[in-house]
Length: 237
Image 1 (cartoon, rainbow, N blue to C red):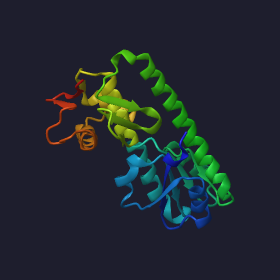
Image 2: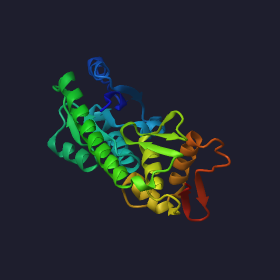
Image 3: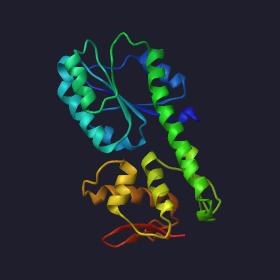
Image 4: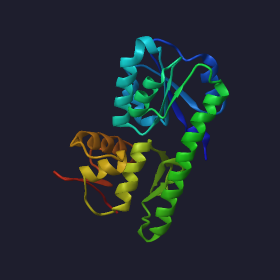
């Protein structure tokens, strides 16, 4: 497992995460991304983990808003770093999607282990599942496209490896497993985001747009990922 693939977003509200914590994460080859309430949604698809650093008395409302938004748009692990959080508030945060509430007595090396153990366990499990599925479907292998689950990347026509975001890779993996068959916006959405479709076709369309930008020779005239009008998309092989 390549531990350099762990992207951790730090959203500081009215309190900053102390430097030793960020330094410990970077020391273990994690990418630390300082974010704000205003810009975190631009990067959420790239994140494996998020730490919300709050001052409980001032930031409860913003923390709750962040947890709801992240849960709706990402499967990143989220921790709330907060001093002296009462049990009732910890329960609220957990109900809104946080996987844990970290107190100020948590040491930097402890926080690093909490994050890395959670993220790498999921990455290993998903990598094993994806590789098993591909091995079972070797007869469907096409020369023009090769999926590389371990790196969340693809090769087109045997050329250079193209890195993808987590959601982009899930999308191409789903299209690949349904090669030459049209799949609906709903099917793609539920396979990628792993939750019930909310009738927001634009989220799928936006994801496919970015995917085409990476794998098509001319994204304005796509050959690999064809649009099936009023229905969805199809990977052509």
